[in-house]
Length: 80
Image 1 (tube, rainbow, N blue to C red):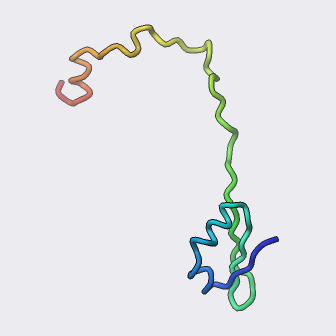
Image 2: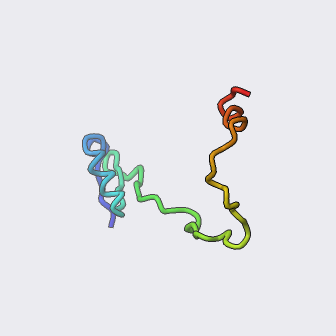
Image 3: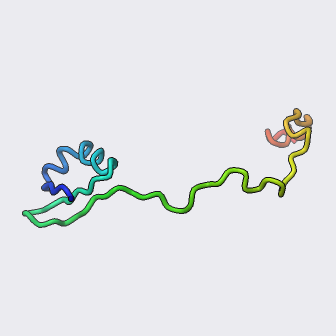
């Protein structure tokens, strides 16, 4: 069930209300006793990332972490 708060209370206690919403509660903000806005927690969108999705499809060279050539470093630093 949603909690109903008036606008003044919402302004005064916004941090507390946001904590309640983040915990999964729904809060309705009312003006003159009539609900005008509903606050609810955001749901994660999309599917979760799956690690290893490219396994066997890409190859990392053995020298991947080797220091870069001075010319390459100079180009990245704008000194070429």
